[in-house]
Amino acid sequence: MRLIRLGAAPSAVGADVRAALSTWGVGDAVLGGVALLGVQPPDCPMPLDAVIVLGRGVLVVVGVDLPDPAKRLEAPLGGQWRIDGWPLVRGDGATSPAAEALEATKAVARRIQDMRGEPLPVTTVVAVGPYVGHVVQPTADLNRGVRVLHPKPTTLLAAARELATAERPCSVDHAAKLIAVLAATGTPPSAQDLRAEGFPTAVADESTMLLPRVTAAPRRSRPAWLPYAAVGVALAVVAAVVVAVSSGGGSQAAPTAGTSTLPTTVVVDGRGFTPHGADRTGDCGAHAFGDVRAWLAANPCSRLDRAQYETTADGRKAAVAVAELAVADGGRAEELRAVASAAGAGGITALVKEGRGWSGGPASFDRSAIRVTATGGAVRVAQAVWSEGESAPTDATLAALAEQALRLPAG
Image (tube, one colour):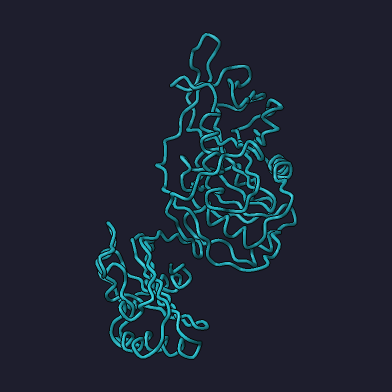
């Protein structure tokens, strides 16, 4: 199990979750997979203690901090939770963490489905602490793919093996994409690391994936739960609580949101790029300038695709413009690549220069970092600038963004 720490544990019992996962060690000798710790997937209303991506399933692990150690916990999803016979309630009258559990897990399931990630079963482990000797769950809840337990290495391992039950394993390529879908920051593990964690080798390596756009949900404060006596007298106030309860698989899975009305986000190497317009034309020279325009006037070009995107790097908003030109053959493509790569030789006009900007975007792509490639009869030109402030062609961060932008769709 490879651990990737993305944030602090949102519950006190989250420390026990991390400790249990770390005992399994790196590699697939015990179980394998990748655990995203302290992650808050886009559109999920709260941070989660862990999301574990396994070869045959995804486990959402969330923590419930009880006021004291318990011998017995009754934990129905749709009813009153009781700790050693005492009702567990909250100041606003809530009697079970299940409502927030369902909300959080449905958000994770929707995220995977809407992003067209690998269709693995999404199930949930509710980690309770500081200690619970015995947990009572209704059979119907168990059948929905939910386990409430005190997180020890053995109990977590048993739950993972019971819940991850997909018929076919998730490949290295699909695992990398799934991790990128769930973690909005960082870069997925390498293919070598994923193979070491038991994911089978993919047939083909795809570096980009078209994804429906999502907006980050605001982080909510976590509710406090109190155990009450039968007469309703509060005994203690506990720390914040987060629970996610899975919809399981099959007919219980969250419905897939329609993507036809949504704009898209494209993920490259774990970085999300939000599109802000695209264009296709057969008149390549009309949208070029300098030596590039002169070259296009003397050589055939059948199609020009252009697109522009917004992303974030080093805490700053940046914009990238991508253009792809279809020329007669590989020889001419290499000629055009050499012309477009030369400093001061001109280039392709970005859409923002033609009045297709967006709120918060750059006024132009002047002084951008530029990268150009030629493959067969296609030439791709990528530019990157900061949305605000000064840009420079030698800016290392912008140069890296331009390199990534070469793999973005141009149309």
